Length: 483
Image (cartoon, rainbow, N blue to C red; front, side):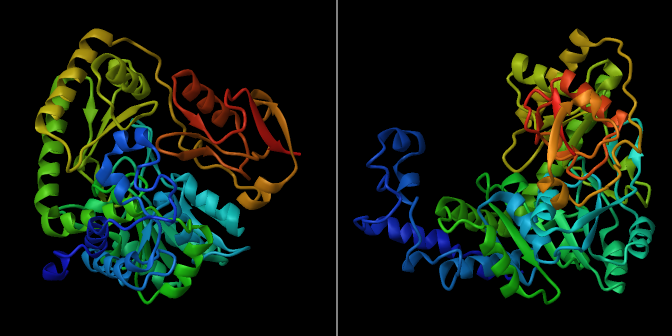
C-alpha cells in the first residue's frame, strides 16, 4: 500500500470543489440542493444535501468511471491489496450477487456453506446455477455453523464436476473463519474460482493478529461491507478482484444490476473511509480488539453467559476466530438470545446487532466508546440477576440446517406453486425463502425439501420473536410449495 497516495480522497475533494462553486442546478435531483424540501434539509443539513448530486463530467459516472471515481477505486484497490476495486451503492448484497454472476451461468454448480447470505441464493435465482452445500459441522452447544475444512471442500469438488467456484464466508456472522489460504490453494489446483463473502471482514485488511483476508489468501473475488466495520455510510460496499480476473467483464455484470443514479453521498463515504482506514486503521482496530476482549472477559465473569473466542479454534472447522465479534451464548441463564436482544433495547436503551435462539452479538467497531461497552456489560449482569429462569433447551440437529436441494433456486422460484398451512408442507419442495433477519441466512430456500425439523425450528424462532423474512405470508401460517 502506497501511504503517500492514500492521503488523497479524489472523489470527496471533487465534491467539495463542486459545492463551493455554487453552480445553478437545472438537473436532478429535484430537491435542488435541498431548497425544494426544507424538512429534508433540516434532517440532513445543507452540507449533505448540497452534495447529493447527479453524475456530471467533473464528478465522473459510476457506470463508466474515467476520472475521480476511477482514481478513488484505484486507491481502494491499493489499500486492500487487490487488482481492482468497484464501488457498490447497493450494499454488499449487490457486491455478492455481482461476484456470483461474474463466474456462474445456467447449469453450473457453486460450492457453498449452508450459512450463506440470502444474496447468494438470490444470485442463483438470477443466473440459474445450483448450490452445493458443504456438510459443515455445527457446534451443538452454541447452535452455530462452523467453517468449511479443506477435506470437505475437496470432497464436494470431486463429487460435483459441474462446479465452477467455491464461496467462503470470511468470517461468518459469528466470527468463525475457515482455513481460507489452504482452501484457496486447493480449489485453484482444480481450476475453480474462489469467492469470499467478507461482509463482516473489512477490518481483516487493517488489523494485526486478525484472521487472514481473502486477497492475501489469493481469492479471485471478495465482497466487502465497508459500512459495517469500515465506517462508511450504510449501503456502501466494495467488490474486489484478483488473479487477473477480467475487470471489464465484471464491470459489465455490475452494470446489469446497478443503478444509473448512484449516490455521491455513498461513494464519497467510501472514499473518505478508505483514506481513514489506510492511514489510521491499524491503530483503530487494535483498540477495537482490546475492547472486545475486555468485554468478553467481563461478560464471562458474570456467570451463566459464554462470550466465546479463540478457544473455539481447532485447526480445522474453526481454523481462526475474529475476536472483534462479541458473540455471547445466553441459554445457560434460561433466556434465548432474541429475548435478551429485546430486553436490552426495551429496558436498557441498548441496541445490539442481533439475537437468535441461543446467542446475541454486539458489533464493536471504530466508533465505539469504552463507557458504552461497560454499560452493556452492566446491563447483561442485571438481566442475569432479574430474568434468569430454567427452560427446556431446544436442541439443534446438525442435519437440520443442511437441506436436500431438489430443484435449482431459479427453477423453484419460477415454478407453479400452491399455498399450504405450514404444518402440512412436510416432504414438499419450498418455493420461497424463510429466514431470520439479521443475519439473513436462509432456514429454507427455494428448491429445498421441507422437513419436520425445519418447520419446528421456524415455528420456535417465530414464537421467540425472531424477525422472519422472505415469505409471502408475513404471519408464516402458510408456505408456498411447488405443485
